[in-house]
Length: 105
Image 1 (cartoon, one colour):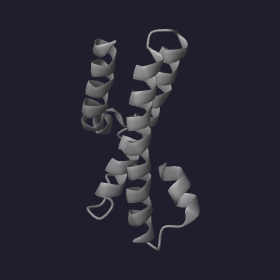
Image 2: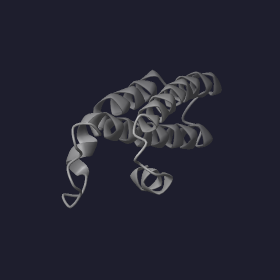
Image 3: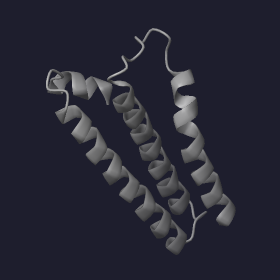
């Protein structure tokens, strides 16, 4: 069980670094004012994927209930923090409308 949790934590730590390299080259590079928002959005997607994977592992019986609950709670707390940071950044950019925010998420 510890190995699975360790692997998930390593995945969360490494994926924000790897995700920009896997993006399509057609995307315009983010401007310097929008870089932090792009990084937060990428981390949000990674975190959501880790939560889905954690749920799958628990349903498959690979993860004890206590480990699942503890890990999920830590992921949820991080997700709340990320969403608050994203909201603060988006509020700081009033020219970005809701439609373009949906595309970027």
